[in-house]
Image 1 (cartoon, protein in one colour):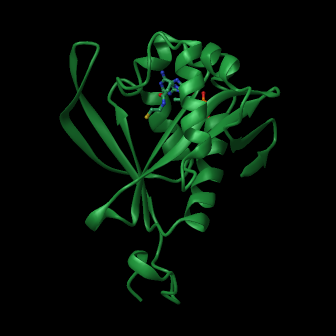
Image 2 (cartoon, rainbow, N blue to C red; image 1 turned 180 degrees about the vertical axis):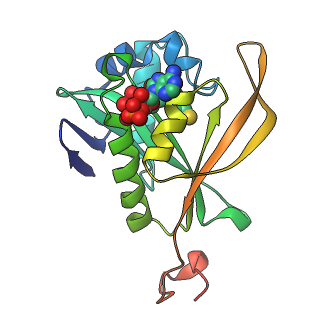
Amino acid sequence: MELAFPGFRIRSWRPGDAPALARHADSEQLWRNVRDQFPHPYTLADADAWVARASVSEPETQFAIEVDGEAAGGIGLFLQEDVARFSAELGYWLGEAHWGRGIMTEAVRGFTEHAFRSFDLCRIYAIVFEWNPASRRVLEKAGYALEGQMRRAAVKQGRVLDQFLYATVRDFRSDGAVGGAQQLPA
Ligand SMILES: CC(C)(COP(=O)(O)OP(=O)(O)OC[C@H]1O[C@@H](n2cnc3c(N)ncnc32)[C@H](O)[C@@H]1OP(=O)(O)O)[C@@H](O)C(=O)NCCC(=O)NCCS
């Protein structure tokens, strides 16, 4: 998969990405805004393991953001199950060296369109820590709506935090022709 934008690309993770990934992902400023399962410090072994897993997962849901010819960030979907099976959580991060240039706003906007085209989804949502106004702004600029403030919903770095829930939805497909267990209501 590859989506091209002015100044960057979203593409599949591939062998060779690990050194750049480890360099860009190894940041405390970044880590304080993502889940604890995101490694910190972020080692080359962590990067190798991520690239190996992401590049074989089926369906492919996690992608690299390539800036200046190297993997400098990530964006992807966490497909939900059961009654939430037409929903996905969106996750994303960018290396600090590239913050503030509008990259993630365009990435979220373009990737969301791609996700609705490629998966049977009628809802994509994202959850942001209360201390991350930049990410809230990204979602707002990319067309996501604030749905609520989830009080005391996370603990990070020893602090209990509220989280903001953002989502974008689309109409069900009018032809309903998506088939199988994923069939959407007509
Ligand atoms: C949040 C993050 C994705 C933003 O990426 P980016 O490419 O720098 O974002 P953009 O440049 O497209 O937009 C950032 C917006 O936030 C604004 N912003 C930045 N810091 C801000 C702050 N402290 N307060 C308010 N707004 C802020 C910028 O001004 C810009 O808005 P504008 O265009 O209206 O001026 C990036 O900082 C990051 O990866 N952070 C760590 C991981 C993370 O937070 N992931 C998301 C978890 S929900």
